Amino acid sequence: MGNNFVVSCCSTVDISEELLKQKGIEYICFNFQINDDIYPDDLGKTVSYPEFYQMMREGADTRTSAVNIEQFKEYFEGFAKKGQDVIHLCLSSGLSCSYNNARLAAEEVKEEYPEVKIEVVDSLGASSGSGMLAVLCAEKRNSGATFEQTVEYLKSIVLNMHYWFFSTDLTFYVKGGRVSKAAGLFGGILNICPVLNCDKDGKLIPRKKVRDRKAAIMETLNMMLTHAQNGENYSGKCYISHSDCEEDALALAGLIEQTFKSLDGRVELFSIGTTIGSHTGPGTVALFFEGDKRVD
Image (cartoon, rainbow, N blue to C red):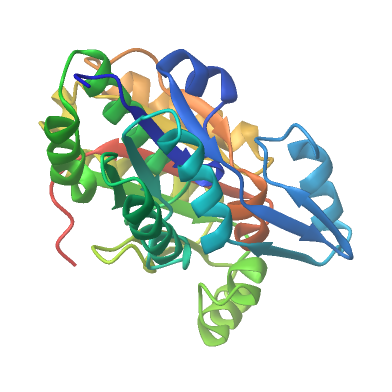
């Protein structure tokens, strides 16, 4: 089949549909719930991001559900029936059951369509960092790499993708079980603005405690200086996503562009989508870049 294969991801990659289409990337939607109503996480088409975060601010109860095995099976079968091989990138197994669901579904489909290859890859990350992995994977395919070469490349860079977040409010991190109640209480009492990242297992870990938003922006910039490939000479992509706090995201993007003169284009800004945003709540900024290998 040469390089005529599908690069696919979950809607939790938090990049624009325009970019996904431009790179030729397919996606499957998670679902989220606002109070009693269930919607697809379809990149902000059904419920806009500003509307979603305003409802959270007003106290709406939000929940999320991963793509189940049957949904993944139907999705993969759609490609298999057309004789298309698939590389599918999943939300971190450290944050969701979607990777395991996709893997089990892929095995069932491959039994029915043994001539088709389906490779499910754990991103060990979330949001626009996994989105960047999907873009890099598609670019590798589009450059003429074979299915096997693209899989090998994708797996080789997963732990080099860095995910750094800061938030002015840990309420929703605690509610979703991503941060302990004790850490959330401590942060609130002392007006702490924590800096977190994804560890090598794809779990969200608090790393630094700083006193305000401005300090958090600088600390996040310092993490890129510390970990980016070639330091200030970093020449890769840089993505930032945010949950309805564009001013903070723009401030960080401006500092990065001043500091890293060799970036591959401008810093690209995206919204944190409704699945990830259900756990972060409004007020989170996340930075993504390629760096040294995550080892802890």
